[in-house]
Amino acid sequence: MVNTIVSILFDGLAWAMFLFIVSIGLSVTMGLMGFVNLAHGAFAMAGGYLVLTTMSAWGVPFLAALAITFVVVGAASVLFERALYARLYGAGELDQVLMTIGLTFMAIATYTYFYGPLTHAVRIPDYLAGQITIGARSFPAYRVFLIVVGAALVAALWYGFDRTNIGAKIRASVDNRRMAQSVGIDVDLLFTITFAVGSGLAALGGGLAIQLLGLTPNFAIIYLVFFLLVVAVGGSGSIWGTLVGALVLGMADTAGKYFFSDAGTFAIYAVAVLILLFKPTGLYGRE
Amino acid sequence: MDANKSLPSSAGGEIAVERARGAGLLVRRDRFRPAEALPWLAALAAFFIFPNQMVLGNQTLIMILFALSLDLILGYAGIVTLGHAAFFGLGAYGAALLITDFGWSEPISGLVCGALVAAIAGFLSGWLLLRYRGLAFLVLTLSTTIMLQQSGNLFRDFTGGYDGIPGVNIAPLFGHFDYDIYGHTYYLYCLGVLLIVFYCMRRIVYSPFGRALVGIRENIDRMNALGSPVHWRLVVAYTISAAVAGIAGALFAQTNAFVTLGVFDFDQSAAVLVMLILGGAGWLYGAFIGAALYMVLQNELAKASPAFWQFGIGLLLIGVVLFVRRGTLPRMLNVSRLLRWRTQP
Image (cartoon, rainbow over all chains, first blue to last red; front, side, top):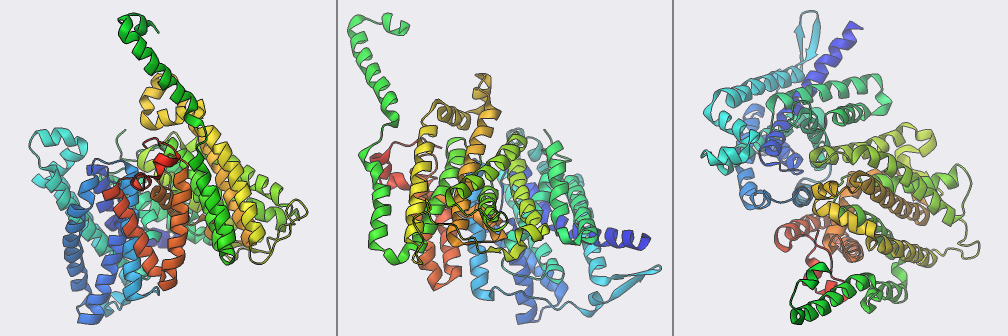
């Protein structure tokens, strides 16, 4: 029984870290501009394929490939943000939903065309492939790695949000965008920066997820729902909200799959819907 | 009337004439125009010109009906949902299970059964969910649809799971008209159902209830302040919309003789949204233009490669949102003038 609980906590934590890494960008986008970005999953998918290509075609090591992906997809996302997203900041959610669904369709089609519809796997380095023994138990090294990366990112993002000047500006803009603008904060520039970092992190998450989930073009839609759930449950624009949302849903999903394997991912939706019914703005959201 | 009296008599006469003209326009707003026969003539023409394309024609008519159901809540009441496939799917399963599990194969009662199942789900979920807005509503509609799909898989003894239900064979229509393999009877059956449902929808959107929905779309706070029962109006609209989507789903199950849990896919919810937007939301005929355009394009482009089709529809969608602005495609083609001045969503 203890073993079971430890397994669920461990796997749930690893899964939650993945959800957090990808969702944090979506959460800040929602909080800062109220933008419903359904193409966020497409950035994660693009990251996955970039990791795949850099590793197999150019022989880049795994960790370096992740770093390259973060930078390249983050930089590329600025083009999309300036050319497409910026036009719809004042628009209704319907226009945003439609534009980003369109973008997702185009991304899926493009990647299907070049990579085919089949599942791709990635060769992870040997030091991440085995088991790591902690105390009396051994854990899969890759999941330990995922948890470590996630924890490091949480710490880095916390520092960035809570301790730096730009973090303070972001928090101010999430709280009250018009007030922030009137005291001279360049919210548009801020948004471009956070959008790039958020998309880069999504891509990083996509690269990390290949080993866990496999990679197909449909990644962009299948897991998008989870990212949306995390943001909605956590409350948009809050780093702690996203972390708590990811932890709650990651654990619920793992436990649900473990105890009711027939029901598939039912548990994650049930928990999310229950929380949203009582807290429509999310656990850490403002009314 | 009072304002009229306070004006000088010479201007008052003109204003009275203008006012009478305005009132006349309001009264005749819902009068049928000759051009409104066009979609129906086109559908009949397609029946005679492309007798070998009836399967595509069928699917198109069903998607028109599905998009029409979405128009009531999206185009008129302004509710953006990502889970409309739930009602389509429930309708399909309602009609299919009536045949395979209960052995009742009369088609019209199958439609009624599908509509009822979907309407009950629409009423319950609408009552519960329509108090939420924004991201919460999007995520809730999306999640409940996926939960429905997964419960379908969980009770696979009853629903057949992802393998689906084969052998959804309906009895001859009115006990007399049997079905040919080219789908001619199916086509006329779908067209008849579409005509009846369309007439009802048209009555609804031009009724005071329909006006109230537009009021909610334009300014929900003001409707609340006016004392309009906003929540209940939305629930009723949502229920009607669900029932119509259920009819579309039931027709889908009956004419394909097969249904799988794929009907609950997010792609399905997205596709119907895309169709409605392509044709323009909020004037009923958007469903006709959008669904026909979508189905024909899909048929042609997917022949070349499914990836081309998906890329094309994505590009079209972004183009419509950014450059044409939603729903003005028909206005550009100047068909809304012919059919009806549409209400701006």
